[in-house]
Image 1 (cartoon, rainbow, N blue to C red):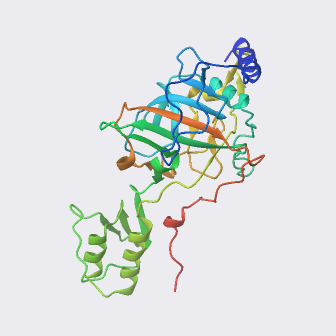
Image 2 (cartoon, rainbow, N blue to C red; image 1 turned 45 degrees about the vertical axis):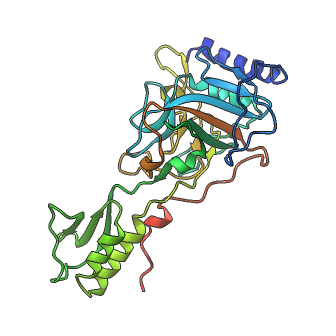
Image 3 (tube, helix red, strand yellow; image 1 turned 180 degrees about the vertical axis):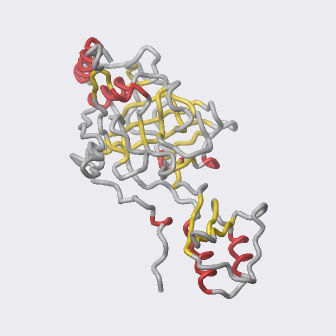
Length: 328
């Protein structure tokens, strides 16, 4: 972002704040609540960009983004990215500049916090809590509106391990067919992905070895799908200066609009620790709950004004479902 664009950013924010009392054109349908009931106040949407993909609803104190589904399966770094940036790591994308979303949140009175810090020690991102809802119409014409967390789960399609000195002689596995592996060198039993009830029953029936059976019980408990429980905060990204041109850029324009892995460039980030390396990603798309790729969606950003600042989400360095049970 050049100096001119940086000035434009703050100018937009000031103009938006001044326009909160204006009478923008009404939309045809009022927003729908999670219970399917209509909002008490008619929605009035003020476009904030030329694409009309970011709209201010001053009456209902929300920012509305018009986007699409871009991914249904895979580990995630973002809930929503900017168009043609990180669609391989996000489930939603929006055709806009990130600073427009930032300005819209400021116009609603959202309080910007600070981006995540990693050195000298980890500090989670701060800022006003932003509730996010995703709305779409399915192929049968049914309208859906859900909290964004319902579309994301803790990653299950990965390897899990349990310490095991040796395989019980009565347990037979076929590596070509089984999700189970035994690493004799590191003395670890490995399992990939969610373990079904049927698989658990089958392995427990093979042996009475207590250590092996405990490992199977642990795999089954740890690999079950679990919905994301963290919330988002308005961290606000930031600017960096090009050393050669001395131009300043809004960091989220690289795509980091609404993140589920901690990035100091995120406009919205989750208020807990979440890995940003490919091997450390905590979350994945909840495929069965997502509409088809390219389905148009409405993303609602609603500042939570009941609290001046959001508290940190529950700590999830390692999700509860991933922790090993205490030794007996």
